[in-house]
Image 1 (spheres, rainbow, N blue to C red):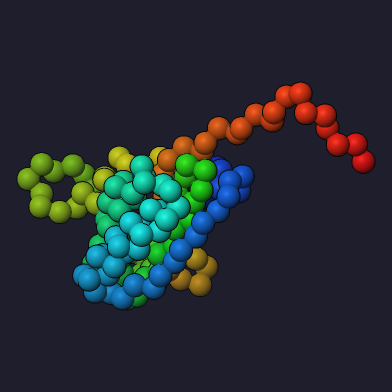
Image 2: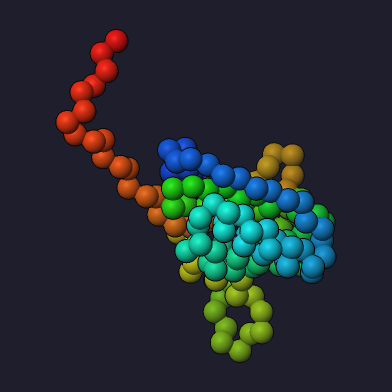
Length: 155
């Protein structure tokens, strides 16, 4: 985990982009709403192979925001070319932290799950308050080689 955006998010600059966002209330039903949005959008984008992991990561982040943030939160996902980048903003001041592994615990594993599934994730803090927990899933698709034997245009 890192505390600032890493270069993983920069992959999205080089691929076609799809995006979706929603405002979620500080209620347990928001977890269901977030999962539904992720399933719908990633299916439309043709990112079916990332749906299950993305749904689980988003579920854990929204659950934490509802439980610890105590206010509405905003979810944004964008992707293309084999990647999904997600951001969950909440106005809470608490710092997300990965809890120590306790085999007897009935909770506290959310960020362990995020850490296990996401290719990269971290937290950024806004100067005006609140924080954004972000994640990246997937690998960028390799660039397609240019066809050979086609003359280049000369200007």
